[in-house]
Picture 1: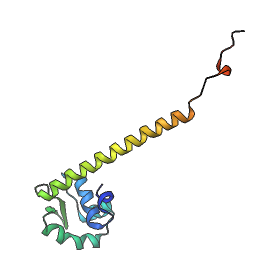
Picture 2: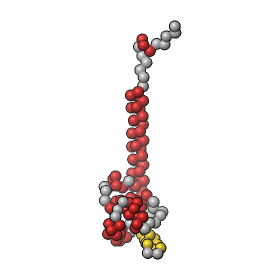
Picture 3: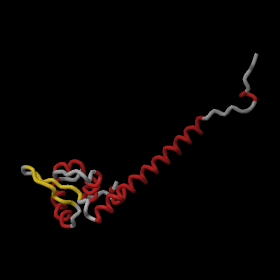
Picture 4: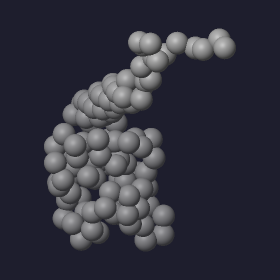
Length: 123
């Protein structure tokens, strides 16, 4: 949802993905695949994200480190709340469009049964 509001950039894509699943942690490979951001770009962004405490390193398994969005960070809390508000607003807009389209379709194909030709013959 962030991309729609803040544009198509690596930081937005990474935070957007992690904010959608705030309780899970991911490797760089998983973040890259899910956010559609190259691994080299993620490695460039990682120090910034860690320094600003937007993400945290949760564990290491073998040679892989796992990261998740830092839910204790006030900015992250605002980001997640805003992400939910954006999702709700988009859902409301899409629902209104669907209702409008249904109304237009019904009106467009509604038969008009008025005048002398609409009478039923009883002979």
